[in-house]
Amino acid sequence: MLRCGPAEMDRLVAAGLPHEDRSGVRHFDPNDLYNLGMYSNTSTTQPELAFRMLFRFATRPVDDLLRERTWEFQARLECVDCAGEAPWRLEEPDIVRFGGSVTDVTAPAPASGSATYTATVTTTGARTPVLSAELRRLTGEYLAAGYRWHMIPVPMQVDYALVHELGVTSCIAASLLLAARFRDAGYRAEARRGWFCGVVGGALDLPHACVEVEDDDGRLRTIDIAKALLAARLSASTDDFQELCLGSIYNKVIPSTAAGGAPLGYHECGSRTPVHVRADIRSVR
Image (cartoon, rainbow, N blue to C red; front, side, top):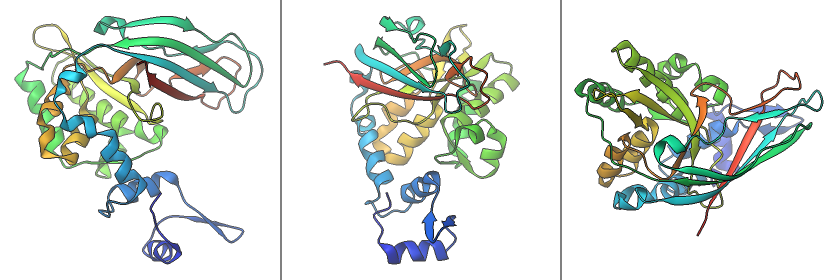
């Protein structure tokens, strides 16, 4: 991941890179390694290369993000400490209200251990920029605050106050904090989870969230605050995409019915361990 040899790893450990020694073998947290690589400025680490590939679309004209796209959507649900056969529930794609569609749905039957949900999802984009000067002010303040995007475990992301106290942010933490600030300013707002599409080889298995807020005209706007933050870090030529993130919708996002801090999947077997949901989303050519 870091494209480092043993000598470089020894230097990083000596400098404080967290790890555990297990029977003489060093074990690292993948989030720590990802964040270290992302900000290493070497241009060779896996996170840096993946980031540039993932966001290459943000430097291009945004018209392609406004057309219809169809995706083969598959979500794999795993109940690690399963207590037996029981019904499953996935917070499904919630795209119809944004002009899209969900067809050919195969929902999981009651079972134990694991299950799969499949569907064909069509997304589309639309330019609906935020009108409210106050919402734009609050969004601009957040973007200018200097928070650094990090890979963070989902349970920690929900504690958005702690995350931001550390000077970092993430899709879920950013959306939860911005939604709270919008509500404090008198607006109806909620963070919502979903999936980011169009990554080579299927979906990137990262949490994604946006803010849904009622604008001054009474219409719902979607603010993809974390993607705007990441695009700004990539290049100054991403201004058009950053503006699209502030109120408009685009075809690389599939929202779900889940609230920002809620799980994407459930198994009613009685296990206390959260269900792991991994999505694989591929473009239909």
